[in-house]
Each structure stands twice: as C-alpha cells, then as structure tokens.
Length: 313
Image (cartoon, rainbow, N blue to C red; front, side):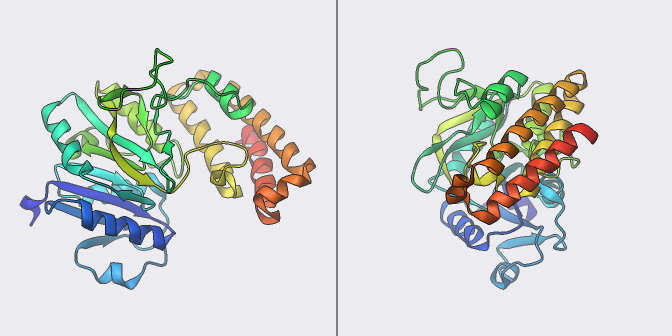
C-alpha cells in the first residue's frame, strides 16, 4: 500500500467534530485514490465512526501536544511523497491536490503551495503574508491602521489587485492548507515543537526560506476555511484567555529565535497592546453585546496574563 500513496493529508484534530466531518467528506469527494488521510488525535474525544473507518489513519493518545508536535507526529507516519497540511475546519474543492502536486513536480524550486482561502460566505480570507515586522505589529495589531501588509489582497509592490491566474511569491502562508514535499519537510526537521499554538507556521516558512525554497500563493485554487484569519479587537480568535496568552508567548518565542536583539521592543509592544485592550474591555461595558459577558471576562483575563508575560517571562 505504501508504494501507491503519493500524497499524505495530515490533520491535527483537537475539537469541533462537525467541522472535521465536513472536512473528511470533502476529502472523499475531492481527493485522488493515491491519497492517505492521517488524523493526529489531540483530543480525548473522537467520534467512533472516524476510529472505525479504515480509510483514515488515526494516531495519538488523546493528549494535546499542540499543532507543531502534532504535525511532526503525523509526518513520521506519512508514506506520501507530498504532504498536505490541512486544518480540520477546512473543506477541499475541485482538484487542489492534483494541481498543487503538478506545480511541485514541474518547479523544484517551489517548496510550498497554498490555495486561496474562502469563508462560509465565499469571502476571500487573507492567507499569504510578508514576515512579521515591528512596524506591522504596531500599526496593524495595536493602532488598527490598515495597509499593504499582506500579499493576496494586492501586489507586493503595487496598489493593483492581484491577477488570479498566476502563482504569487510570498514569505509565508496560512497553515490551514499547504502542500509541500515530504523530503523538504524532513530536511528542515519539520515544525519547531516549542511553538504550542501560533507562529509555528511562520517559523516553518522561515526555515523554508533559509534553504532557498520558494513559497507560492495560488489564487486559482480554492479551499474553504470556516475559521477567520484576523487579529481585530472583536476577533473570535481571541475570545479565550488561553489563546491570547499563547499568541503573545509564541510571538516572543519567534522574535527570541530569529531576532533576539529586538525582543525588548517586542515585549514593550506586547505590554502596550495588552494594556490598551485590557482597558478597552474593562471600561466599555457596551462591548458585551459583541462578545457576551463570559468572553469579555476571558479577554480581560488573557490580556492581564499577557501583561505579566511581557514583563516577567
């Protein structure tokens, strides 16, 4: 069987079984016969039909190892020449797998390919980016100033909209759906397992760039992604204290690893961002109608913890 597998799809699952079921249905409808599906179970609960279905390889003991280590566990069990990293809240459409593999076969300089991501209402999500900068963090995440930070909204050096029939070079891609060669992932030692949540995909693409590989955004291929890629003050991404602190801690890990001389500035910016959002969520009770009392309390707790992390961690 191993010799017949060309592509291994790795899904790291933690929660949201309904979304996982839709994801698996889309794989059944839009993946070729030479594909295997590896589900890394980071959850204590997984529906019996998935565990019984021989089409799916389920590994993991139910312990939550995080996204990075989970993908590395999946990679160690993969047989395919190509690896599709896929979030459980995505749905394949058309022939993304075949087309992505074709591009990788024809252009060995390309190491990673990511499709256009659309949400449940067919809105295009931002999914191709430049590497993080302090300027972007200050303007976009703290001051909410919109600008040309991302690549799949406009050309990197122009205000003109992107042409959607060509590959676009970028620095990194949203990890919700990315196709790579297994040998390239092994060459860069996979994900850095020290990232539990957030920045693990940025770090992965940083390593890809360091070996001279190209990363391509492919807007002609589409994958549905029900989660929202946004960092706004009302974003559901930050409706829990755990996610808020994980994001800020991983951000400090990233800068400590790649530009340690800038870490004091990063700490200061995280402090300012956390303090300002803590004030907003504490002093404006009208915000409760956007998020609910429980979410407001979680955000307050998260930003308070991030304040402490930025100073003491």
